[in-house]
Image 1 (cartoon, chains in turn brown, orange):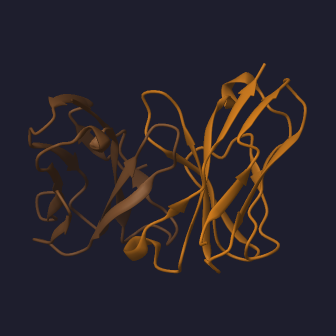
Image 2: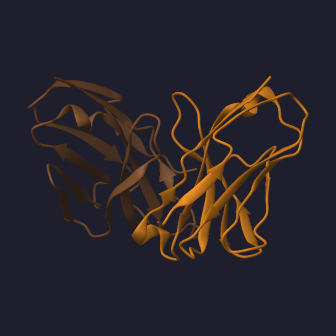
Length: 114
Length: 114
């Protein structure tokens, strides 16, 4: 079982604050890193899939960066809004593992207060 | 609408009574997978399937069975459920390059075994 770590475990911010959190993963045998957004009472939805060192992806106010050499990815939210409140999951796809396997971190739970 | 459909959404059952959670996808995806989510833990993979009649164990397969007789369906079978299988279950599917495309998740099944 591969270890994927996310920090912090939870985060509370005020509306309008910008925030970021971290996903750490094994740097060897890297193939892809996924970010998912999981709102309460819903199912996880894919935000980004990143495959290249130095990748930067953006969707509205949310962006992500990837460093495969040191094994980390950052997710940034600019000007947080209450609707950004969710758990953000990262998942690592290992080049060496069988094709169907994704390894998930425990998530960062974000709460944005109005 | 492209989706993964799980049933039931909620289920309370008694120890030892066999049950099946159904999962169906309408996207012609090759990969399908079952995950469980428990408090304080990340999504853990139970079983996955790379195509019809091709399945393999994930990280926590004990007490579960799966089958993939048709491409669209991937049911999860608990032959003799026990209280430690009380959890939130997600089915997910992906096109052949799950590392590149990411998973589409079903809406989840909350199972309680008493």
